[in-house]
Image 1 (cartoon, each protein chain N blue to C red):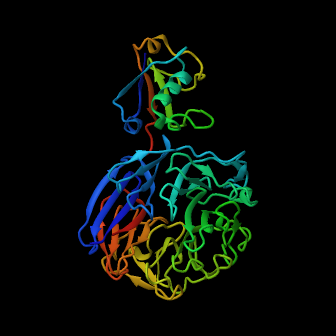
Image 2 (cartoon, one colour):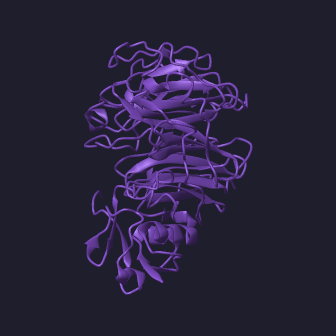
Amino acid sequence: MSGVRVLVGTRKGAFVLTSDGKRERWDVSGPFLGGWEIYHVKGSPVDPNRLYASQSSGWFGQQIQRSNDGGKTWEPVGNKFVYDGIPGTHQWYDGTPHPWEFKRVWHLEPSLGDPDTVYAGVEDAAIFRTTDGGQTWLELSGLRGHGTGPHWSPGAGGMCLHTILIDPSKPDRMFIAISAAGAFRTDDAGKTWRPINRGLRSEHIPDPTAEIGHCVHRIAMHRSRPDVLFMQKHWDVMRSNDGGDSWKEVSGNLPTDFGFPIDVHAHEPETIYVVPIKSDSEHYPPEGKLRVYRSRTGGNEWEALTKGLPQRDCYVNVLRDAMAVDSLDKCGVYFGTTGGQVYASADAGDNWTPIVRDLPAVVSVEVQTLP
Amino acid sequence: MIRVELPAHLRTLARVDREVQLDVQGPATQRSVLDALEARYPVLRGTIRDHVTQQRRPFLRFFACQEDLSHEPPDAPLPDEVTSGKEPFLIIGAIAGG
């Protein structure tokens, strides 16, 4: 019988939650790599037992850990992330030039075809690639070097490259997003990049429609239709039908269009999920009610999903990498909170139950659907 | 023989007990001790000193013989008590954060 494995990164370690296809009873294992911040854990699509984890510490820096047995055991691999050439400067919060400094890996995106190839999105924003299972990492410096890099500036959480999407139909096409530079696309496997932010409007920057400077929080796609992208921006939920060449707002009737994660149903490319958050200065759900919003129309028309979620006195946040879907039928949807809960829905969001309630603050959630 | 004490997280990472014992070639200095430590335990590269600049990471300090050696030049000789193995070279993480 098929099953699912939920990979949870928290402020104090990694956890692996497993269940069969019913997704009713869960086995919780961990913490792995205890005491360290685990920004992201993700498995290879071609070898589900090959997992990669970003392990970070303000004291001891960055580690990358690899598992070859689905998360039961881990081994450290390469942790040397050095920018290509002379790194140069980006803009600091006050607009002055600031040298590029590696801080941590926010996101690991394993290749769709090779378990030893992984892309890493890092802070200060850059993309690296390993082709030897994480032992060595080289920067794809065409992103930082394409021209606008000196004008990028950090968001409140740092200048992080947090989203990497690989187009399953065009192996050389990838999308990435940076807070607070915006979204970018490569069509030649990472050699060259260009901003794809036309249509975004950010009132908090000097030129609200500038080519770069937008605080994109997350991008998502459905693998059957990779030219359609969905974006949770700092404020605004956006949609592109042309691979990011242009965007239009689809916030519609959301109670607030601020938030962090966005994801797409595994079998319905027009069904998308967000978690509205009150504001950029109040990172909790409006009215103390934790509600996932679902649109079955690719945006604009949204319904609140509340069954099983706390509807009073709830003031947690859901971070940008902390939502994921499985590919079972019905589609499972999962998200983790800064309060340490991981919620699961085995029916596409209609009903929710907590898998665990008391983990450390959840930073990331990924799901593997196992044969 | 030089004795080195690591903070808990680095002991876990390197899979060692409380104290590491190292044979250091030439004069015992911060640099030579850390070079020997990283050669024995490559996983510690980048965790104590920056990969590129070789500067001590900001939230770590070096102590020996009840003295803070963190701002000593990396090639300054370590105290005789450390060189002889009588006292350990301590690598300590700042007590800060959560």
